[in-house]
Length: 111
Image (cartoon, rainbow, N blue to C red; front, side):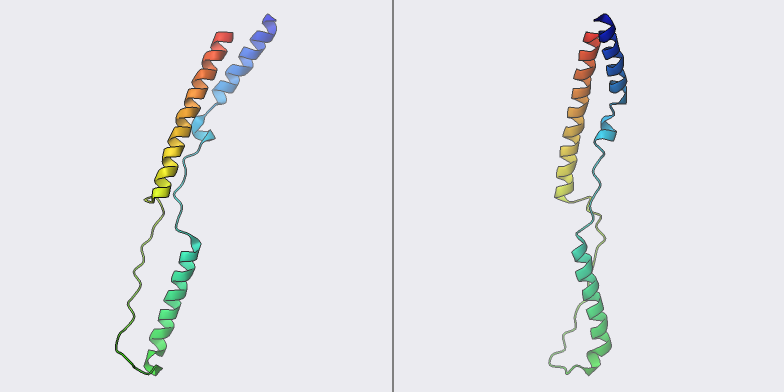
């Protein structure tokens, strides 16, 4: 029985040493805006470029000109969804560390 207990403790200590919460729960990465937005933006820019080339051939009913599109590069790191994901991730890391400490205490108690 003592031999089995020592074998368990040795194996358990090796497992605890491999227990890396940061690797087990990698930090979430910001998600760029949905791809379809890029497709719509590209289509709008293409349409605007075509319009600029052909506008002299279009009969003028009114003198209003389309405005240039102002686009911002957003990597998604400031979104509310990303902030919520970070909160969940931090809770998962805290839980992982608590579980590791509890497991380590139980292994030490057994050994």
